Length: 171
Image 1: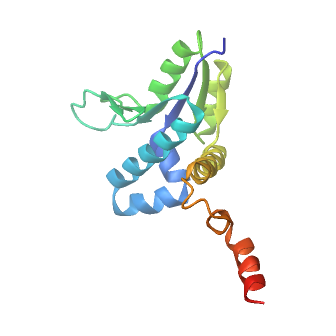
Image 2 (image 1 turned 135 degrees about the vertical axis):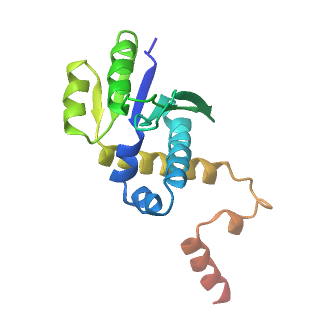
């Protein structure tokens, strides 16, 4: 039986590393967080990893921290005086005992610490490429599962082939 795989994500690190999310964060950090959660929720549907997205709240005075489920991902806001890095290091160390653990961050020091615990580092750029690949896979699954219209040949051809047949039909 395969071991379950966890993906721990340094939320703000990924937001500021991905151009799309960094641009959104200039307008609204809440919106960028929501978009990251949505993106990784879709990604989880393909990869089937247990995904934990961690956001710093260490500068929030009196912050108690929180752990919430958003669809099929877990979202953690750290407590006051706890960084996302601290939380990820601690959690990765615990999970690594029984599971495969990937950590998504582009923080080089964090990557070294994570690798020393036996976890796999996943830089933001590699996560983005993998997410894009998963999105392509989702689109392909949707295209293959579309119901056939009237089961006519023309309804099931791609645009280029349909144009060729139409040109032949018209002479």
